[in-house]
Length: 580
Image 1 (tube, rainbow, N blue to C red):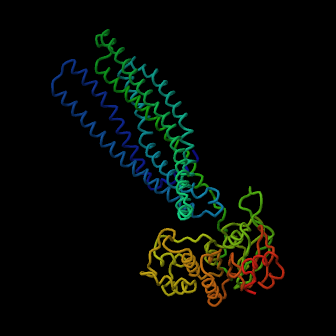
Image 2 (image 1 turned 120 degrees about the vertical axis):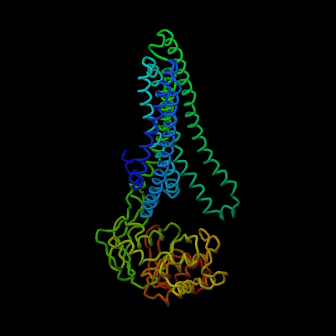
Image 3 (image 1 turned 180 degrees about the vertical axis):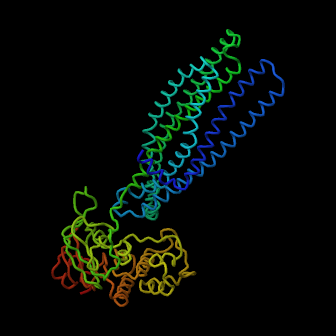
């Protein structure tokens, strides 16, 4: 119930629609139960002989009751639809907002594909379940109670049939629902895998086609889809048993009422039970059984949706691992960086540390190059500076202040980071660049692009800076995408600029021009460049060599050639002595 309360907090402005839906449902149920009672009275009076005026009067009452019941049903449906859609809208917004506050560690915990499933499939399930709850979950029990009460009033001993069929039907439906539940619950975990398959395929479409792996990807997707189909088929096959069980109980009730009722009518000459009462009993019997049927379906649906409720509540209850301090520092003095006895691992359960024994000082305005093999934790190292992750122990200081003491927005505005995987969003080039500074003038945008060596190719486009970028930047080359991302980062006018292998797709000449521009136009900005090419960091004030999560050497190009075997080996492999 705790998870349900968390979800219902998103109801907010839809409480009124929920209450109105419940009120109209009660009115609809009351009138539906009343009509068979009026019908029974009319049938009995007709048998005794009455004039047409009474028949017309009762007929008019029945028509009005039916119309009002219909209106109540329509209004209940309208308000329940508004309430459930409103809940889904608010819940979707709350979950998305919560995810925006997650650190990388939080996202790693859930996985991207799982978060996508939760914000789509799971919220849709909760929406459908909520609408079912405020409509059928109220209507069915009320119909059941009212019908049994009216059947007892009208049928007397005939109502004993419910003492037999209700336990049988209830036991059968609950058994069916319980057997179907595990299959429904398993489906959601498999939806995560299906979404992961689609996401990977779409993101890596060029790789898939480049290696002619379309058949493999189709087979992988089909396997995941087939797995989901099997679980749903199994669950639906079990749930399909509701129909035969329902039919059995329905016909049993009708036969019992007709057989016993007919005998009572004939033996008591209509003094104990009459034809009208017997017809009402059949109607109430159908209503009782249909109510039980609806309750069983609600049970299955709610059981299935409870897994979605649990998954959404997990997201909403998740506390970001990185939050603002109570009294945050709101100004970064300069771009100096200090690592003091830093150790880091991605989770408390990780067997090994990604970084350890890191001690380093970087003066403000320095250009720092970072080299190291794959898996040496270069990206992890720089991600600690804008506090995308928190250190496990030790401290990272920017401008002489521990990054954990800064206001997050202040710190990240002062640290521009061009990630290894460059991302552009749907929109014009100007729209994408203004992510760095939404108030940037056109002159500032063009200056940043000239510095990033992007202005020249942008002007070759027919619409220039108003050229539309497709989703993911699919209509620009890798090198163009990297230069646009560098320009975007420069527009923040940062105190620290981090390039995480962000010039790997540009040629050597362009790379050199970008570095020359940095040196001339942003001398006070601390530049940290992760690179695979020695040429990209040769002129850096300091070069850091990372190996296995530890700094094994620091110095200038000339110093490292003399003191570091790793650097010398990388240099010789890439240059073969050609840059001596």
